[in-house]
Each structure stands twice: as structure tokens, then as C-alpha cells.
Amino acid sequence: MVPLSKLLQISVALAVTLGQRLALAQQAGSTGEELEDRPPPKARVLPPRNDYWPMGPEFHQERRMRTGLLVPGLMIGGGMYVSGILAGAADGYANAKGFLFVPVFGPWVTLATRHSPNCGDANAEQSGSCRAAQSAPTLLFLDGMGQLAGGILVTLAFTAPAKRWVPHIASSIAITPVIQGDTKAAILTGAF
Picture 1: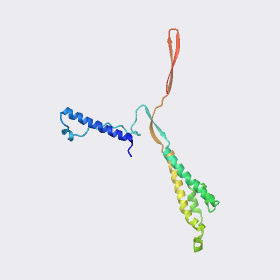
Picture 2 (picture 1 turned 30 degrees about the vertical axis):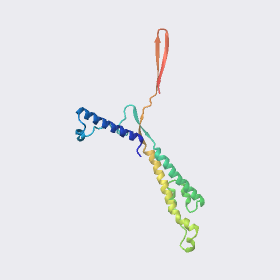
Picture 3 (picture 1 turned 90 degrees about the horizontal axis):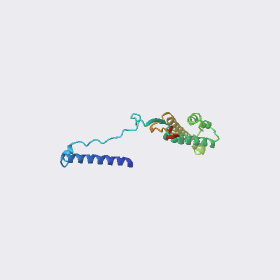
Picture 4 (picture 1 turned 90 degrees about the vertical axis):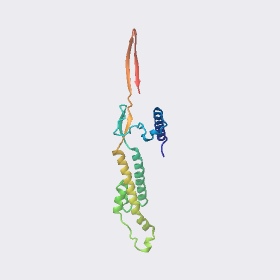
């Protein structure tokens, strides 16, 4: 969806271009058909607001943390971490589930060090413990990937700050003495 401001810019540029073409046609004393071969005049384009194009002396560049990466990273990584701890608490942290307390690396260590029960015979396969043991590696893998993705997003939020052009906010206070005859005063001026 195109924002309303962009549509307004496009319509103003189009109106200016058409107005310029009509003015040229009237100056030439024609209907404008001769001008069809001429390219339209270029519209003024504002410079992009990025690192390579300074905005002027009233602006300076600031580096800020990327909250757009931090918040989802904390939600994804933290949610997977808490769910891993709660799942481990359901079993009393048996079968190497104590490693789930270690963020990001815990699910991978648990996956590598846990032991699977023998589910080879037909009676054992139907039991709930065998079904849980068969789904545990998949759940540990998803837990580890979620925590890893969250950790990467949080790391990027701190290590790759966003650069933004912001206006100078210069505040100043000046005291000006005034002496006129016998009157002595001071004028306090400021800009905030």
C-alpha cells in the first residue's frame, strides 16, 4: 500500500510537469503536439536521508540501538528459553534436562547428552514415555533454533546501531546588561 504522502508527492510532481508543458506550448504558440517528442522537464528530487548525504548544518548524525531487532529477539529467545525450562521442570530435570538453564547452548547440550529409552518392542512403542522420547529431539531442536535466532537478533540490535539524521537541539541562555542613564537592568534571553 502506498502512503498518502507519497501519492501526494507524485500528484504534485505530475501537475507541475503538465503545467510546465502547457506553459511551453503557449509560449511556442502551438497546441503542444510539437512538444510530444521533447522529454518532460525533470522534477526536483529531494536527497535521500542516509549516511552519504548530509542534511545540512542544522542536523547531525546519531547512532541508536535498533529496537526493531531487540524487542522481537527478546520475545522469541526469551519465550523459547522459558518454555524449555518449564518443559524440563515437568520431568524434574531428569535425562540431562538441567542444561536447559543455559541460554542458547542448553538445548543443544541436552540434545547431545540425553539418552533415549529402548522403544524397540511393540508394547513399549505404545507407551507415553516412548512417544515423548521420540518427540524430544525435535522439540529440543526447535527450542535451540528459537533461542539461537533470538540471540542473533539481540546481538545485532547492540552491535549494528542505526544511523539517523536528527536536528540540533541547541539550548542557550544569555544575560545582556542594559544601562540607560540612571537605569540599570539585565535582559535574559534564551533559546530552547
